[in-house]
Amino acid sequence: MTKKLRGAVVGVGYLGNFHAQKYKNNPNVELVGVCDAFPAQADKIGKELGVPSFHDPKDLLGKVDLVTIAASTLSHYEIAKMFLQNGVHVNVEKPITATVPQAEELVALAEKNNLKLAVGHIERFNPSVLELRKHIKNPTTIELVRTAPYKTRGADVSVLHDLMIHDLDLLLWLTGSDIETMVGSGTMLVSKELDTASVTMRMKNGIHGIITVSRVATTPQRSIRVTQPDCTLFAHTGIHEIEKVEVGPGGDQLTKVTKWTVEKADALQKETDAFIDAVLNNHAPAVTGVDGLRALRGIEDIQRMIEA
Image 1: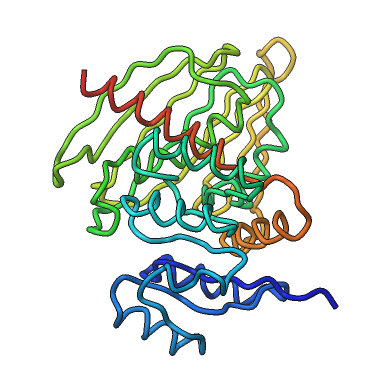
Image 2 (image 1 turned 135 degrees about the vertical axis):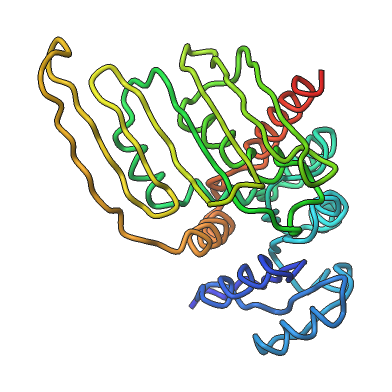
């Protein structure tokens, strides 16, 4: 039997706790510990999961082969850099880092040391997104909407880095193209950062993209609408329902509407398993550090455009 990989999670707050559980569920990994800057939180989660707790990431060196970093965005760079410098494969929550130069350095460091650097853009593992992707043939427009009620968790960054980065990564992935031009706006309503934003983009391959996000909405919504010459696809990615409206030849016949529900799946487990598999079988992660850098670079471009 192959020896198990030794894994740990750094930052075991709300999301990191779930990451640690997913490691425990994977038969190829031994969760050797959890780490958090708040000792009481580390000890609490460690006790719940029956694993040692650590209060300083440095104490994990020599004990782990791979880690997931779910600490605050501002700390991603320093923690990930330390592990990559010491031969540890890294899966870091989105956004990959706080700034593009930091992300560029991590990508170069991972490549230099022949290590896996994955980024937690979990929506790529959403079963309804994966189902929708099967039906995208020659899109003209892709529109993504993500709204949520206000929460203090995540409010240390703008809605662009908190929410829109999910959809920008999806747009780049679904179109297979980079941004050519864009126009948009945003507002600060509750926090000191942007709380709402809407951006219209033209991709280099001619596809139009529209992303609308808000973290001060009364109701949550996650959806993707894809317009194609012969049909429109609409996915409620939060509740896993898809609708396809087809138009007859010439566009003058009655439309055919098909609706179906996609089977639910544990997207975070799939994300974790994919990272572990990339390490085990030495292939590129499903969402690479380069992907994370690309999404962050796009978000910074959008922020500069809105601020200007």
